Image (cartoon, rainbow, N blue to C red; front, side, top):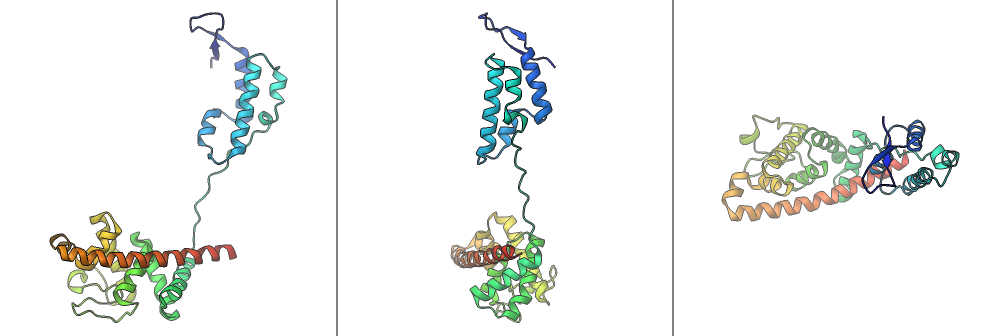
Length: 255
């Protein structure tokens, strides 16, 4: 490794070997590792003033030594160099237990939608499981169930849609098990995920869910109907989401 610095007695950009820079670099490597200070600063959180101030003091002490304004031992005895502030460890994402999620959702369904405790406790885990399987927000699935059936498992529409998510057996019966609450909710979540992939937004996916993709694209009246449905469901989703997250936070604080 070669260490050089610009010569001060020439207008030409020439370079000469610097023993001071060599010794400072070797010591810094031994004390704080091989990563350059600048790279540490770039990777440090911007809201960590202690780390930034530490690096400023190190740079000032090193510059004073290299410019001849301080001895090697003055530089080496700088507290910030002897014991530099370590970069904070990255925050690990919080892993929330599925039972805690289901409990929070059940509590929200009771408090916000006035669903009976028995129904809420039975349905919430099914919603959370389908949400995780199909990567659909559980609060959105719950809002769809509320809009479609008001959490009544035996509901059947004049058009023939069945169950909690009001799925048409003639369209989705071969792909889904619509005879159980778990199968019905899972099918509804699967359809929402499919429509989201087609449309690119939950709002349009909900409109597709309500009137069908073909009718939505062909008919202005159907689009208006779908948009009204989506607006209602998304508003309910936000209410459920806020209540669920609040209960999760409260439960975590109690642990």
